Amino acid sequence: MAKGGYRGGMPGNQMNMMRQAQKMQQEFMKMQQELESTDFEFTAGGGAVKAVITGTRQFKEIIIDPEVVDPEDVEMLQDLILSAVNGALKAADDKTSESMSKLQGGLGGFPGLF
Image (cartoon, rainbow, N blue to C red; front, side):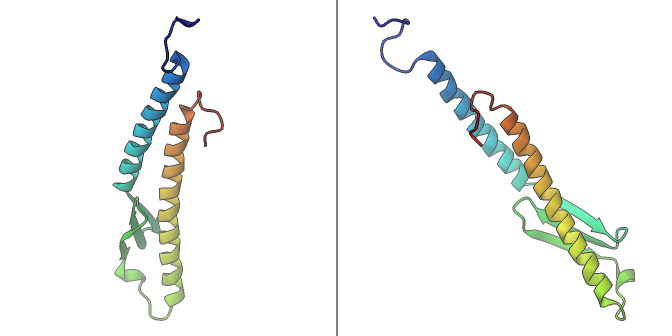
């Protein structure tokens, strides 16, 4: 019998690392599914324009308050739409980053992995 008490196979430390890696992969997949099924929204102009996107960055809807539709000031409406769309994308990115940080926080046994 080899010194250390095991015959062939993986030593205990390597086995634990494999288990941690598998658990982390499962947690990552769960987090990814949760993010993909989440809607992110952002309003601009005090609620005049609202953009909603899915976690897969697909636009679900853009809602425009009819009171802000001024044919004399189309540029303002365009700016509001851009602001709402970019805000919704940033909200999705922020949530993704936050979730990844939480997941990476459990990587003490894998420094430099991400």
